[in-house]
Amino acid sequence: MINGIVDTIGYICLKMKKIFLTGVLCIFFSDIAFAQGEIGITAGLNSSNFSGARGGSSKNGFQAGLASDFSINKSLSFMTELLYSQKGAKFEDSVDEYPATVYLTLNYLLLSLNLALKADIGNDSKVFIFAGPYFGVGHSISAKANYKAGGKNMSIITDSPISFGVGDDDLKPFDYGLNVGMGCQFKRIFLKAQYNPGLCNLIYNLPLLDRGASLKNMNVAVTAGYYFF
Image (cartoon, rainbow, N blue to C red; front, side, top):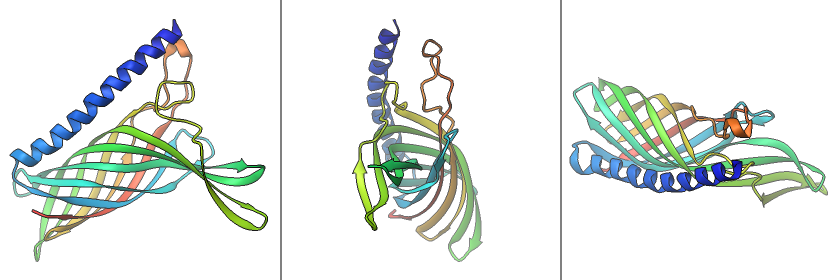
């Protein structure tokens, strides 16, 4: 019975993943097609970890993608981003009996939807604060181990202990959470700092499988971007 439930969930996840990807692209590009605003690119650095994880600490990653900003009125705008984003954490482990630091990277396609309050500070410059939800679908999980052997620093790409799926050691392929941040814009150039607490428990918590652990993405990002038009 449990295997049947897991198989059903797996099938639903695959279908939802395709629907999600299609929906994300439709939302973003319909905004571009029918709204008046600024469209550009953005990229930056992530510092991520898991809440609820034991022994983990923050690791660095990156995010990059498309950004848009559509004015509602003089002080309020709707900001969206479609991003490839690296999250995860690092852990202390071992490789061939050598102490090692393992960097676990979760790669996501994310859509963020934010309302921003802006203030004009002159000289074609603005400052703003923003908040809203994000929705993500997991693309892949990778792991890298750094260790010292024979007096030499070694680094290897290793098999990830987990993947996105519905198995006992898998993580949910979908994520959602909040964006809260602030930034500034000078003409077409913008800078942002934001905090992204995940709200989705990445571990399956089905009563029949008797799981109660909690694991959520936590991320801080500093990014820059440029609006082409």
